[in-house]
Length: 327
Ligand SMILES: Cc1cc2nc3c(=O)[nH]c(=O)nc-3n(C[C@H](O)[C@H](O)[C@H](O)COP(=O)(O)OP(=O)(O)OC[C@H]3O[C@@H](n4cnc5c(N)ncnc54)[C@H](O)[C@@H]3O)c2cc1C
Image 1: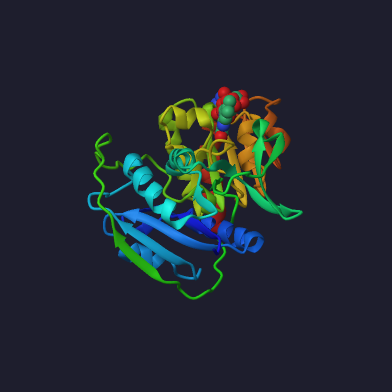
Image 2: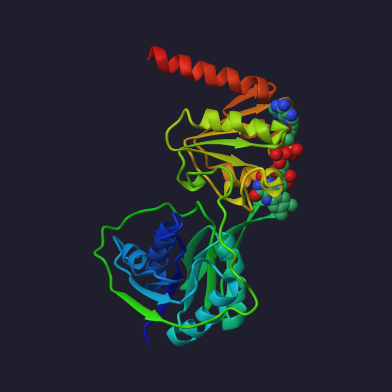
C-alpha cells in the first residue's frame, strides 16, 4: 500500500493558521525523503470553505471531517475522532505544528495510535535510507537526532523553522465527511482574544522583544509604539513575561516558544539566557538594550545599548520619527 502522511491543519474562524504553511513546507521535504503522499486532515463544524483554501498552491488532497458542535479545538473530540480516522487511513507519519494545540494533541495521538512521537522538529534528513529528525536540546547547546522505530510516527514541527514556500501546484481534491461525537468530559466555553501579537512572530521582519527589564506591564505600550513604526513588525517576549500573562504564549521567543529569524530583533531588558538565544539567534541584525554591561545578550548583538530601556525607547521612537520626516 502507498505510504501516506497525514497533516493535521489548524484553523480558526474560517482562516488557516499561518503555521499551516510551515507544515506544508515540512511535508514537501518529507515527501522528498519518503515518497509518501501528504493528505491534509481538518476537523471542525462547517469547514468546507476553509478546506478548499487549504489545498490552494500545494496540490495535496484535503479530508475535512465535519463534527457538529466542534466550533474550536476540543481536546477530547479531536483525539477521539482523529484516532478512529487515522486507524482507517493508516498513515506512516502524522504531522502537526508544535503550537499549544499541537503540543496537546501530538503526544496523546501517539499513545492512542501506538506511534513514536518526535516533537519540536527543526530539520529533517535522510541517512543511509533512514529518516532522521533534528531538534535542539540542552537549551540550544546541542542538537539531538531521532529516528522512529515504529510503523507510525507522530511529528510536531517547531514554529519558525520551515519557511513558507508556495509550490505553485494546482489544487488537490477536497473530500468532506461527517462524524458525530459529543465530548462528555470537556465543555468548550469559547475563545477570548489574548493581548497584543497581531502578526505571527515567524512572519515578522522586525521583532521588538520584551524581557523582565521592562519592569511593569504598562511599559509594554512603549514597545508596541516602537513596533508600530515598522511595517511587518511584532512584539515578542521572554518566557517570564508570557508565563505572567503580560503577553500571550504565541509571543514567546525561545526554546519553548517560537524560533524566529527577522531582519531586525530588538531585545529590550532581556538577559540573554540560552533558552531565549535558541529562539532568536537566526535574526539578521540584533540590537540589545540592557542596564547590565555584562548581560549575555550582548554576546549575540550587533549593537549593544547600555541604558534603561524605559528611558531609551521613547528617545528611539522620537529619533525614528524625526528621521522619517527628513527622508
Ligand atoms: C526548559 C526551559 C525552557 C525555557 N524556554 C524559554 C523560552 O522559550 N524563552 C525564554 O525567553 N526563556 C525561556 N526559559 C527561561 C530562561 O531560562 C530565562 O529565565 C528567561 O529567558 C529570562 O527572561 P528575561 O531575560 O526576561 O529575564 P532576566 O533573566 O531576569 O533578565 C532581565 C534583564 O533585564 C535587565 N534590566 C533590568 N532592568 C532594566 C532596565 N530598566 N532597562 C534595561 N534592562 C534592564 C537586567 O540587567 C537583565 O539582564 C526557559 C527555561 C527553561 C528551564
